[in-house]
Image (cartoon, rainbow over all chains, first blue to last red; front, side, top):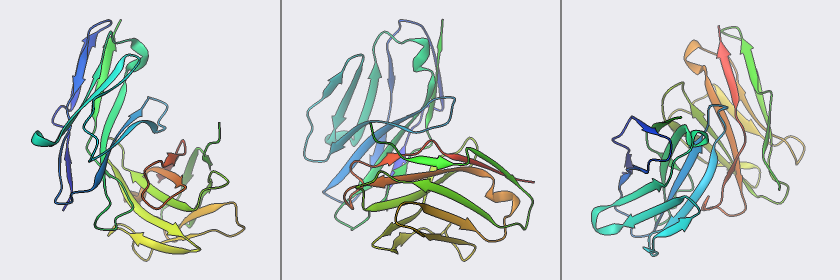
Length: 116
Length: 114
């Protein structure tokens, strides 16, 4: 069974603050992929990052960074110096490979509000 | 940049009516997917499609749902007799390989059943 938990339902921060969105996953597979998607108020899903289970290197892309730790089954997402345009719902997702699954299991999302 | 496009962006239909949601995947992609997001809830997998047949489907994807690729470019989701609980955002996605490692999502179709 697969499970993705985003314990933070809603977060509010003041502009320019840093914020970390938590994601904890559960899988029995040794090969899997983790994703983050952004869903702005307009509703579309925007791909942010993909990580495979063999690559634990943290990644930084501009103001975004991701911390993947297999030991704690976490894949957390940090936004540095948040901006109002970062306000959105952020989804963490898991895809297993070993089971032949070819679909994504999403967490329940974290709604981030950045206050100007 | 290539993108997945979905039409219409919003559809309102009466309960019991048939509805067809349309998607144009990225042209060289081979795998196609439909996902659903009930308002305020998580995104859920419905079905995946490859080589003109369903490769995997979830429990949500019952006999009321069907998919097809009628003309080699469009990918459609049909709901035969809509129910109120079918009201949701429906996302189409496509990927080049079966592992959805680089799936691209469309902007979604908001379906409202009244």
